[in-house]
Image (cartoon, rainbow, N blue to C red; front, side, top):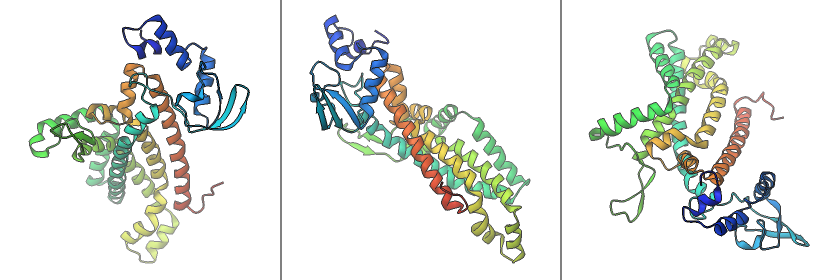
Length: 329
């Protein structure tokens, strides 16, 4: 059964006729090249579809919300939203619905983690640069090195065990839990913000360590620029120099790092979400891989790719704001 989508969808008690019917419905009876073009056709906003009921691309089965532009013979040209197909294991549930239910949770987790990384990373990076080679700088550097070295899955297990089990009496934090959970009576869903704390902190550790290093090194480089020396010669305080002149120019490499980490987080913090039981995109990808739910896997990869492109475009716009000398062209 493993590796045959039609048999996976039907389960153990399938007949040969049922398998053939499913293969025809989903196009599994075609060659891989044909199936690939079927998938591309499903994704395109303007696509071509058959008017014959036995064909995979038949429009009248309700899987497309399409507006017909042109009909020639047995083929219609339509405009529609991208169709990511249906999950193999969720009783015909659309992949777009599956991703739509999990992506917001990952977004909340990623934003929380990146906010922690930005705020603490910039502050600790500034402190580290101001106290270069002193004991405070050395402590921050040790913390930063550990943060970059320790794998996320190990940090997740350690934090879940220590704060969710050993210190549960004092923290009231759970080892696992998602943003939305059923109440004690199993009747209604409630938001539990405390479940966000541990996964957000763990997910933010590595980008926090990177931001500290980048902010420190970038700020030390900026301190050696001529305009900083001029500002000091004019009698400006160190606080004014950092606030008005140094920080903005030192943020360029930090923005680059943050954009990459944020895209990765949105792509799915697989280990963190799975260990903490956070119902996000990362956990959904792991479940789909375990059950060979190919449409969910392909849809998740496509969404990840789109997010990377959008975030990188947004970062380019931020560069222009940070440094007017950068040209959009």
